[in-house]
Length: 601
Ligand code: NOJ
Image (tube, rainbow, N blue to C red):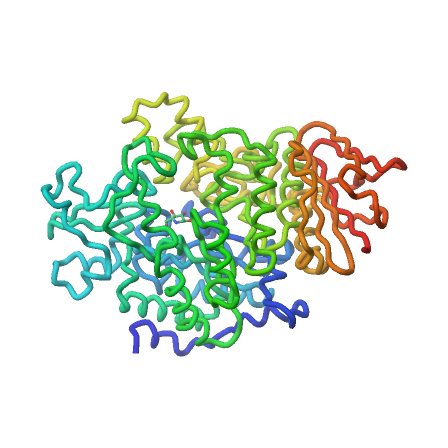
């Protein structure tokens, strides 16, 4: 019997098969036709005026998600946490942090979501815990602790004295700047933390650790959750020992080594995931949605992770496309996007997972800047460019993820001074930049473009103070423009980004070509046009999108679209009056316009 197994015996399991009521999904997993909406609880809706979003706030806004039509809510962490990394540092996996509410509030959210046929997917953060988790507190208490081996403890490098520069067991840099090792004075050993020093890495080699985690996951399934989004799951198998290269990969300005090859997609990854599947998901009836967050994952690895025959995870978040505007100095040194690179990347993943595996499609999450500011136009063409970016993503094959506020076309936070930032990654980067003598203007430009805080401001619900996110003082500044860019205004306007996303989701639910159609990219080298087809034995969708602020003439014959049934029926379009081909097979797209035609084959 495991510590986690008994407590929620009284809770009736709510199998996520309820999701199958909406459509006939007999022939495929329900998540093939699903759209997932990510809620970042701290910034979604504040019900009690303390400036921090909470679970009752989410429950109160479920009708917004119901109207949008999403099938699943992925909840970023709401567990007990010291909030060093906004909840991605967990100190109790089976309780809710008081900042967000109670376990009873979460049960109510799950039940209210189920009433609307929406499943709740939890964030599973098990590469690391908080340093305030009782497991770590016990582990650090002495070198003889029964849980010492639950984390990665190492002596100083041979020939050095603990605490002196260069004594760290390896030269690995952490994702959040500085060394990935922290000396614990009490026992004189270092522990590994790939993220902040308050996020010590769990040792997955230890079977007791794995058993506890699986039991905890079963506990949540029993509570009625529809699956898990697995935080940095491809980092759980590590070879801890060797130094990382100082040259390979993106060399770090801070001089720490690149440990990536030792801890990304490590040797026991597939074994761990298969074991998890067997110990957790096979133990419950129903099918769940599992999505792994997998930084640095290759297409080949992703195919293995998502091959149903391997019984590991359903899909993974790949990161290649998110790096296409990172410059030589990394993400805070952005460079302009070259559209053909983005098209080619997504096309490569479409082709690569066409036969085996499945794609997760995303532009946004709590770690990325807002897409309309990043690759659209958040000025004059904000609404239409947000719609067109939504169209191209949702018309790819895979499961789309919508991040809160994306359906409103929310732009970046627009912060102009360091004091406005809250995220530890941004603040650590700023401290490093100061140490390295980087021009403060350059620093602020990098943060304004790429800081994770861009996506972490409160959702704008109405035109009131702080966009109605809170009646109090929000924990982070609000994105300007809520007076017009807010959910209330969007729902009342059929031409809004919201209604466009609603139509995209509806199209996926009703047109099997969106789900199954074979993908073919057209005009790959074109720098403004994003054109592709999706084709089944019965029908074809033709997607034509202008990713520029200029008018764009499209010659259908040049794209190989002149043959076959005429492009007449519009499945979805960015404008009420969509562009149509003239008698000569020419079609003119207005700035940022997109149109999807459907025809028989
Ligand atoms: C990925 C999460 O998305 C990010 O927000 C977090 O900081 C790291 N993993 C560490 O948990």
